[in-house]
Length: 58
Image (cartoon, rainbow, N blue to C red):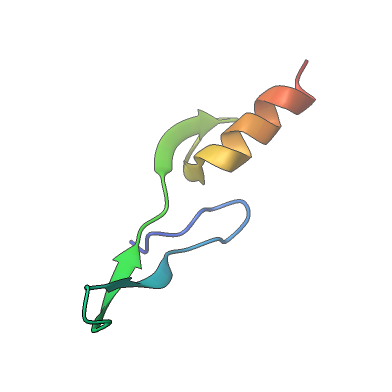
């Protein structure tokens, strides 16, 4: 399974950590995925989508 949100299709991003001598080392910044049951379906949803869903349900 890919590390991708089932609702917004957002995935991991690339970034660079740089040392004091400005040498860059590429790193992958993962997305914060949570497993949630919605309407009987088990979905992987990012936390920003969860917060938006909670805001719209009020």
